[in-house]
Image (cartoon, rainbow, N blue to C red; front, side, top):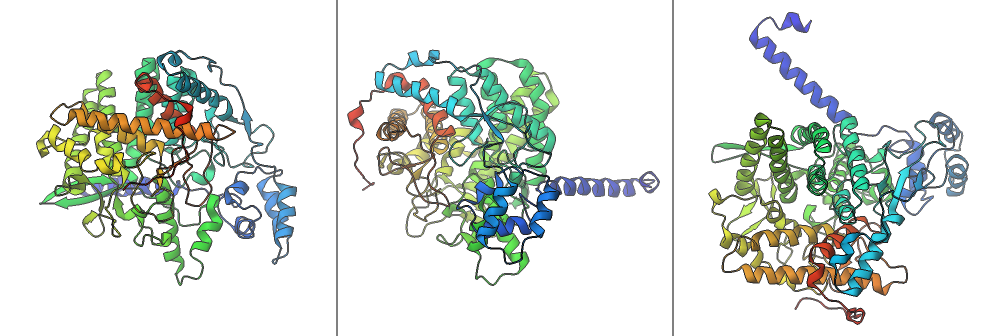
Length: 586
């Protein structure tokens, strides 16, 4: 029928448009989990709303003792007014405890004394680095489905072992893996790094993208797309060209996913541009935070469509990695006013710009000039769009852009509208001399926020707003510290009159972050490496958000090892420097 309709060029064009729309629809509709146990349905609602477990994630990480059909049939026999005790007994009889689908194992390439330790002259720092290296043994896992029936678990099928984040995060996570890979490479664990990458690449082959994490309930969203950067880091250290050749078509595939499903078209001065957004198509409560999501909207007079839109905005906030922050909220203290999908994030587009540059270089390496030029042109257009829509000339700073209301998005609430994400273009070098960027302009970006970068004793705050959410004051995070440090280094390398001041800022940033990580480790009997830190308290755990601060912790370990390996020879530290003093910027 299609061949017959396509008798004329006009009709053929129409058919192509319809087919393209159909492909996009099928791609979007596949970005969800349909399990009536782990993702939606009466059983999930009953168990989670009864709070059989305090943390909703615990339940959806449990494996089934029987087939889904059998368990659902048993649930349907429970009385409609089943009590929490009834449901607790039902869960115990039909589900295995958490982590039964996980095997703890020793990575085959782990070394007791990796060579990088010799780069660290200070004995206190060297001993600590050795302890962090030991942490890989605590965080190494592999999914084990041998005991279970098909579809009786929420963990994704991947072939190789991986490093988990830690704490309640019992599986791998997408953007966490970038800093974990960097840490593994420092530790000389090239096989483990390769395995992490192979797992993520296989998910792109299967789903077209990398899900948020290693569970089926994360299939409705991705996370900041750092897979291309991971591949670059692995190749740069190992020079494994065959790995790169096999990975490149898959990296192209992931890039196309983001360009086909996560873009907005913008126009300025008669020119059309395209930038990317976070956008989950989920319209249900998150299974792993089900109780939080449902109770958040309790009592609000919303239609099902409005409620679903809030859930979509929430899931999109999770896709950003910043779950959650005043950055996304219309009302700073009201999570239900979240508007993630309405904003063009400066950090997402910086990452994609850097991906385009790296993908161009990869294709150039294999003499694929057509693809190389394609990505270079994509990067050229993106950097123009970043300047047109995200750059504030008056404040010499990048901001997110509200594409719905056509304006720069600044959250102030009586304080400076600073978010650590505003410095990500410095890491990605997502700027052009054609737009007037030079060493002085870029130095002014850094110096304009110098008081924020250096004014706290234990790192750079995610924002200057205290909202109660974890991606705000007073928390500092290793991935954001990494972006900031690398960004300031990039600007300092440009030279200019401000280069020495920029180098001093870099040294202070690294010194404070190493110190607060070490002191958190030193002050706790179990040698904690926190997921986030309190900028006002050297060694203090961060707080806020929907769950207690976690120990482990994959990306904290990775960034610490990277900093110690790269800059460890420049710093000294003694145990008595870890004072229990709480300070704030004056």
